[in-house]
View: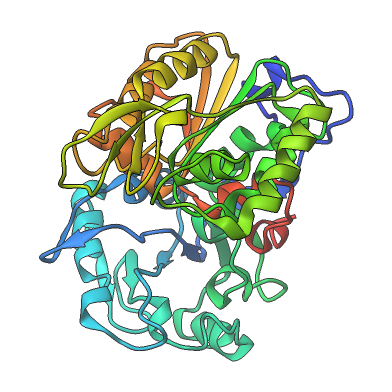
Length: 406
């Protein structure tokens, strides 16, 4: 069954006349009944001492797994990766603890398979696909081997977070068996598609932070044209400040990105997109030293910026409060260590109180930040399970894992 995504409720605020809804193949009962179904999930979760620390990505996969079981799938084979084992079987990257957590959350027996052969269980989670070097090479022989060994007749992509990777377990089954979008991938596309438009979006604010600018350049260029506001913090904001000639002391920033930062500022100016940069910051000589709030003009010498300051927090809060939609990717500072979590925590809590504002979050650090801030995930309109995938999708790139579903 082919479905044209409704883009509801986001399209109600941005009813773009030129925008064509994305057409993808989605799950339907008749496609899975009495079939062996292979599902690519994103179970790349933090594990400590053999115990899953954050179950968010596992929980997000449950609707698809339950749909398959409810609608008579003969067997469900789950493929996933964990960490970066670089094509080698390393015990610390085994998915065995994930199988135990999935069994607990699904309330149903989950058979863990150490290889890619079929067992007897109704739900089977196979070992880390990245233990095999053929996975990242998108080796067609590896994909064919998995299909033959499991007896899979249908493939479902429910791993949005890996959909920007042209790996064997993501795109290798195309044209071999029917390929469908899982419930999570469908939800992600519905939530994010409206913001790929190249038309101006009044009331849209982008809150961006984190360390590496390289991963955000293309999406910043896109929103410098379409958003009303872009608010920058973290090392990302520091790079923009330094590019404008501010002394940032010995802070973390990327001088090689100065030209790009100036280019984005020029694009924003031309398209009447307001760029908001920190006006004050929290500095210290090192993370364990005493910190001080200073205006950005007073940063000098060995000072390092670790967070945005109270005046910046207040001005960012004001912009967010008067937005229609906020898309957030990346923390405002070194939130993992107090007191440098103030900016990120304050803005996270602000977003949860804005009942009339759509809030879309993405990226592992952002998800960790809201957990650190002790705010409920349910308070946000949409939390994307993809970091890189979300950014690439928003900038308008064709994601390999989504293209095979069209």
